[in-house]
Image (cartoon, rainbow, N blue to C red; front, side):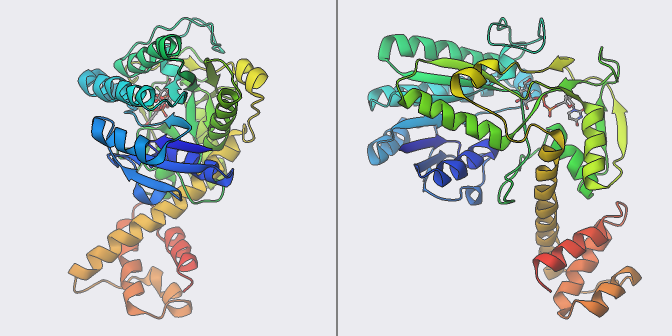
Length: 390
Ligand code: UFG
């Protein structure tokens, strides 16, 4: 099948492209690269385009004639949506309308939509099933809920069949280590704690310890990115098989507090993370846990990586790889502009045993300099030595 993946260069979209290709589908990624990364698209066709541009949309449909569309392109920060509702309604709502109109115009009838737990707002009960009332409390959640509502009308009027997947907390990374989370700025809990563990940031701030939960920190339902993508494949099969439009909540059904996530990261990484207690973040419900009974029953969905340690372990493998890459790039570019470096005692062992080229010595010295306060230099350098096969 030919699938148009809108936003396929982003975190979830890129994992989806990889999975679709592995399953033998033809994939066309449509992305404006505003936050995605071209090198995260591991195969298929790439079309640089923006949902705001009708001509670009027409071109991709005419050129590729997809059988189905998966839509991942949206802004995702709740706080930003409160400050800039205009951006969220334009990108998440209005641009999605453009996409749906292009689908109607080009007679494409199958649509998988990335929705969110934020369509529920402050929950009346947990775990949250699909019967829970929709009362989003911020423009981000409202923009997604508005799309969900118009999808029902587009089905009625145009026969466009859709599945809305309400993600709880997407996390983890490609188990093969090729892809992972690369948001800029990063706002999500797990990658932020991992960056604190790898030394890319000094600490993690806990947003509130006075919630009505056992340890006072917020509880979330973390779902592995691979399990999330697997649900999309099943949703696609559902629609292609003639299934009706549906909405599914996607999570593991077990909640973990912010403190439990920090503890898990420390266990998986073997690093102590510096934790700073901060005030509550506006708009954070105390608990968000999914009831995914419907997805399990109707789609036959079964998470493979429900265990938080597995989610964190995959994300940690990515963070180690990515933080090494970042430091290498930064050190390498600065190396070109600097003329002298201080040789540190700590590097002597590595120099004596493994490194021969002077330029690597300089790069590693610089890494040691920027990591001095985190105690991470040796770990990162060893990782680089291994990756560069020195
Ligand atoms: N948190 C911290 N410190 C941080 C970052 C987060 O304590 O530095 C806490 C948050 O307050 C929250 C939990 O960690 O309690 C998880 O926060 P995330 O930002 O990782 O995720 P959210 O639950 O806020 O948001 C996720 C998605 C949104 C979606 C929302 C639906 O990222 O896109 O779930 O509830 F809208």
